[in-house]
Length: 285
Image (cartoon, one colour):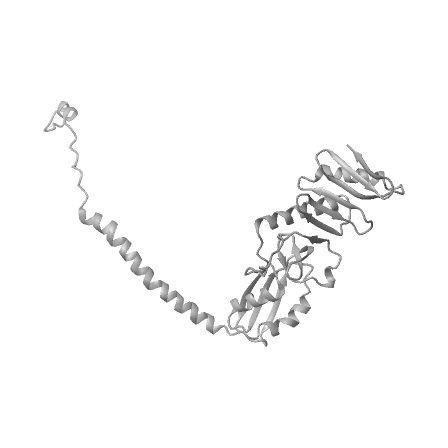
């Protein structure tokens, strides 16, 4: 059996020697907390001007001409693509960059979004997202209201049958400023009134009830007018579901009677006041 220079007991009792921890050098800390941020700032100051120079060079290399091949792409069914294609060369004739082309198209047609893709030296693909109008409204002129509560564009004969919004904008409004996407900048209360008008429109569509006009009345809320009769309906403010069910019951009740309601007031809690041409005021609780 082979002899070892030390015994088994000495192996068990021998303590493991650990290396002492090295203290961090103050030079390393100085580099980490001071020199690293300084180097980052210097790199940024060098790269940022370089990026601007490259961007400027790229912009000036994209000079747009009306003779370029223009392709229009849109998922919308209401966009008159042929008319837009015919109009585009005139709109972009002064544009120097693809960004300017997008801005000019956006402003002229009041699209929700316009993006430009250059696929060849003289070829542009124009992607547009058209707005879907739900109402007409009088602002600085007769305009349209989209499903996204945006007031934009101009009312044309194509949309003459849209329900009309009245008194939605704040009274005495003189400032009509438009955003970069060519929609009127609205106050929060005006947006809320449009949202409530959309709730009314959804309920009317759900019950196949055609609307002519939705008017906001101070201290009372919303008033409805219909194209097929002269009945005025006061709904008040939201919620509208129960009021609409009551309205349908009253319309059904008077459908086969001569004294059709001239006014139905549903903006009182739990009450329906009905006024007819013959009988005057009735109260239905």
